[in-house]
Amino acid sequence: MNEERVWYLLSVQLSGEATPEELEELNALLKQHPELGLRAEIMRNLWSRKRESPAVAGSHFDKHLQRLSNHLAVPALQFDNETTNETAAIASEPRRNPLRWLWAATAAAACLLIFFLVYTPATKRQAKAVASNTISTRPGSKSKVELPDGTQVWLNADSKLTYGQQFLGNTREVTLTGEAYFDVAHATSPETGQRIPFIIHTNSIDIKVLGTAFNVRSYPGEKTTETALIRGSVEITMRNSPDKKIVLKPDEKLIIKNDDATVISTANGDSAARSADNEPVMTLSRIRPYKQDTTSHFETMWVKNKLAFENEAFDRMLPELERWYNVTIELKNESLRDLHFTGVFENKSLADVMEALSLSRGFHYEIKGTEVRIW
Image (tube, rainbow, N blue to C red; front, side, top):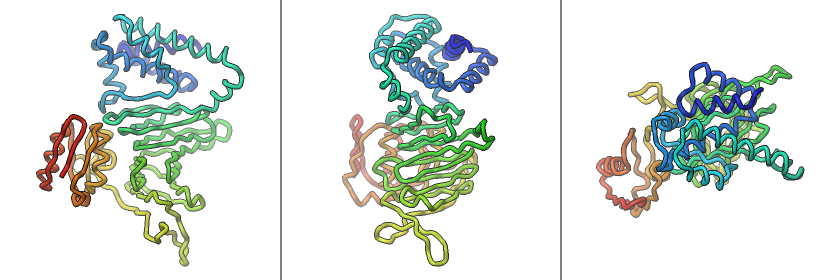
């Protein structure tokens, strides 16, 4: 394969000049050579960062940003193995033709990678081989990414997804912190002809799928982990009870409390989840489409950039509002925590949302910059 062909196709894609045939060829080459996928993503990220420089503007960048964010928000992907100094140097360059700039940046990135492969001592190369790729989003932003196997992942605000360098082996495994919507691609082992499972690890549960679409919410500090299945089938294992499996069907949602839940077998052979105080910690319920948009569920409306709550407790809503608008909220009246709200907000400012909530429940609020007080 001519690697220069990949970088050329990537450059015309980002500058908005690629033909449908060239885009198809690029996708095929990246699937055939997943080792180039991470470098391609880094180049896309550098390109989006370049857009933030006041010296650079134009329709080519705008087209790329719209395509990359998939109409969600300004891209905010952070790649752990980016090189900060090189990024800063590129951002300070004078205005250039976007295509010529990408060629130069790509060549620099390629040379940098070759340098590390050739001149890094063997022990360091071995450490690099077992390293992980981590993609994250900042508070106040959301982004869509495609994994090397073709799986589509939408990352909600303040979320992180990690996968190993050997992602395309016999098991596809990722670790999620935060919230993400997965549309998992089918993958088959060339040796056995069997489907390769896709496994998501969170702090309290593991989720195993073969090909399906579902939403997972597992933020640090929250009391529960949620899995909502849209289509297909998933098998959930609680970390503290790895011998017990819970299989979800389409339109089902499993909520598990994170405080050391354990699955136990009852006398009649059924399973139940209990906490240390013997209280149920697992809830299985049905999800339903939003009545005004039957193609969406409340659990996944954030993918379409809609802030949605269905009979949600105020105490649980506040962290989501903080992540969505990148603010800090102080609740001065503890009695408000148990209030429940239902509503959908699309393209609304924080002030609009707070005004609507306060009018419906009669509380007061104040917004000062990135700080909000509620009483």
